[in-house]
Structures are given as C-alpha cells and as structure tokens.
Image (cartoon, rainbow, N blue to C red; front, side, top):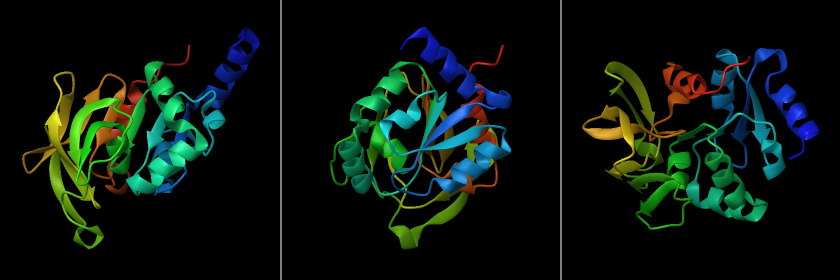
Length: 206
C-alpha cells in the first residue's frame, strides 16, 4: 500500500473520531451488531467483498449458518482476506457461527474452518433453533445475560487462549491475542460490555 493510500485509509477510519468497523454481511444476523457498535460510538460498515475491509480497524463475524457462510467465504475470496486481517493484529469479534469459522477444529459434523483461534468446538451443542434459550453466565467475574441460539460448545481451549466468560461450567467467551470470540450472542443480551471490550483494544486517535 502506498503512502497516499495509507493516509486516505487512516482518514476514513477516524472520520469524526469514530472507528470504522467491518461487519461481515454475507449471511446471518449482523444488523444487531451494527446497532451496538453505533451505540458505543463506532462506525460499522457492511463487508460483502474483500475490498470492503480496506481502511477498517476491526471486524465482526456474526452468527448465522456456518456451512452456508463457508461456501460464501470461498466464493467471494475471504479465505485469505480474513487471516491476513487477523495477522495484521487488527481486532476481530466472532460470535456463535463466527467462532466456528475461526476455530482450529469443528465437530458434529467435522467441517473446514480458518484455524485462527486455538479451540475445538462442537456445532449445535445445546440443541436446535427451537431449543434456543437465555441464561445468566459470568463475564470477568460479574453476572452477564446470555442468549444461545444453535450455539456451539467449546470442547478444548489452547494454552494461549484466555477464558473470559463461562456458563454452566463451559467457556463461552474467550480471547486469543486480537481475537475475541463468544459462543452466545452478546448483541442480543442488552449488555454492551463484550462489544466494549472489543473496541477497547483499538488504537486511540492521536
């Protein structure tokens, strides 16, 4: 990227002091994430093609159907774009299906993933869509409302993965370097703390 392009992207990222956050909008329930980000002072932008990530400071991978999303990611060329974005150290928030997409191993059934997050997960571990439920878990030592919709279960956590939230003894919110991932839907909880943690790691405007 040349210097002129870099300066233009930096200006786009911080127009009016609001960080530009990419919101993967290929499939799934991404609108609720956008509402939370706006509430917290960020500027979400829908990402439908790899080029839409240019200038974004962070990326949200929302819930949805992981098999369908994997097909679209391959079709539109995100298999290289998302890992490159993560390798640049930019923060990523992945929820439910987004976590499945990033996991190193996916079971029930086994499927491809990007392998950016050192966890093994089981798909639909808490039941089907009709079995969706709300519960109170714990995030950073305090009660936190959680919404589980066809949620994956984290079966194994790598040594470099930090567990930040639990429910019923299971890890449900984890962090590995610049990746924050939840098995539940924090955008539906009515508590913006998880998105706040995601935004807190963005570089501050000088």
